[in-house]
Image (cartoon, rainbow, N blue to C red; front, side, top):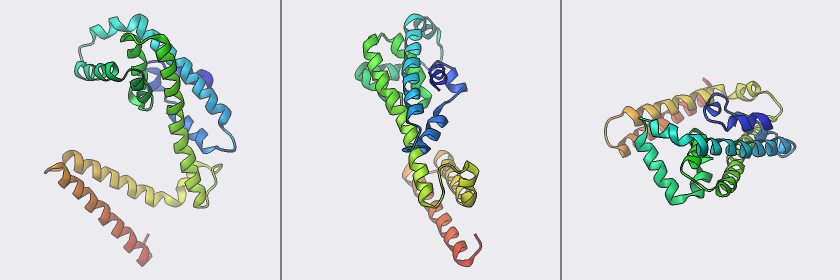
Length: 212
């Protein structure tokens, strides 16, 4: 896990080999076990962060100068970086799509090594903790429903496949309404609320009549 997490912090590799599901799984094992593995992941992420930082500090500037796309987004990111410094690095570690890029750009934009070392360490702890917390909360909730964390994922999902399907349909419908619906945003949000109420009513009616 230590080696995998180190490699995962490098550019491109983090997209091809995401380790976030591993952190979630380790969270399901808490508090009985999983602490040692999570600690190894934190150390690996912290070490890997330094590799991305020094890659940006030594070779990243030339690459960025040749970039012809994303200049607007890069300028906004640079403004946030200049304004918040280490705080920006910490928060960015919590957002998977931009975490590795932020590590590289911190080197390109000249953050001091010790500042990045400390900020990336705090970010690594918080980033892995958030995914472990998702796993822990999920396992605790399922255990409250009579399921045990050591049972397989299919066993977890089996009794709730109808509910999972309905939630997926609701999310898809909400996304379509918000993205392609007509009218102002508050009106589209109201439509989403009506869709949720309609689906809730349908589920309740089905339950009462024994058809779910």
